[in-house]
Length: 97
Image (cartoon, rainbow, N blue to C red):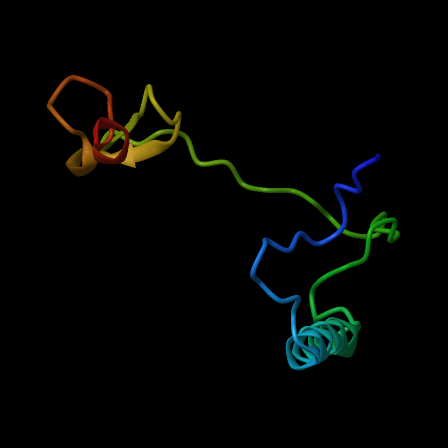
C-alpha cells in the first residue's frame, strides 16, 4: 500500500483537527494575504526594478581614510581608532567579540 506523505498524520487515539481550527487557519491566511495586498504602491523615494534612472547623477564624494581611522582586517570597514580592540591589531571591537 502506498503512503501519502503529504496527508496530515493522525496518531492512534487522536482526533483530526476540529472545524474551528481549520476555520481559524483559513481566517489567518486570508488576513495575511489582505495585509500584503493593501500596500502595493511604492513608497516615496523607491523605484521599481527596471525603472529608467538615466537622468539621475550617481556621483558620490569619496573621503580618504583619516588619521584617526583604521581599516578593520575582519570586516574591512573604516572604523575610528577608539573602536580598535587592542592597539596595533587593526581589528574592531565587533570583530574581536
